[in-house]
Image (cartoon, rainbow, N blue to C red; front, side):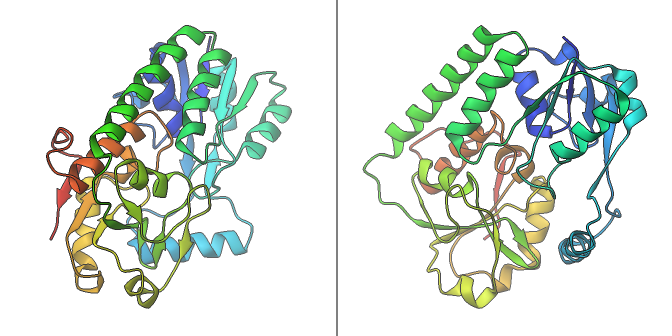
Length: 294
């Protein structure tokens, strides 16, 4: 089967299912499995200017949203040339990835009858369900079943390791300028890692707040996890707002890989957070996932 993934999380799922060789088209952000952009047509690019700081990104996104302008550009000709049988897309967040309506309209224009699957999880359970659905639609249900079973076993191991321990209040910053409290599955990651989310609601959307509101949350620890950024950028952004953050430890995390992308590596993110919140309860994560800033 020829698979086009227009969502980095879906590309990660395809790779984790052992189907990387079936991918024929991806986005400019797809980086897992490694080297996927070199092997596939890149059919989605960003419409945002390069080199913006967090405040600049926020301003451009707000402006484009207010004017009804897209955040992403779909290369219809490249998608048609890739001739996919299965297209993976989303409607969860118009800022995070190309919306499925744009894809469906493009397919109608192109005269393609490719199967379109929307990958729109809001919780960890829904991420696991998305893994199952992608596997089934790609014709590999057994691989999906085995992958989900392995992920559940790891989640159960973390739950057992943190059971009965005191739960610190954890502030997760999904953006730093302006500050955003997390939504979707991110507060759930904190809970599964043995913490209490100080702000943000499981399954809800991320929300912009003020620094005064953050001060009132009473966080014991802050995790800087800027949406779409890796560890080095998270560390830099944490330092930029360090004096504004609540007192207590501050940790930066590779959010793009382990926090905001709704794929199998969310389990790696939970394990990394558990190691931060409860040292010694679970194995330390490999280098490059989290870093203490304060």
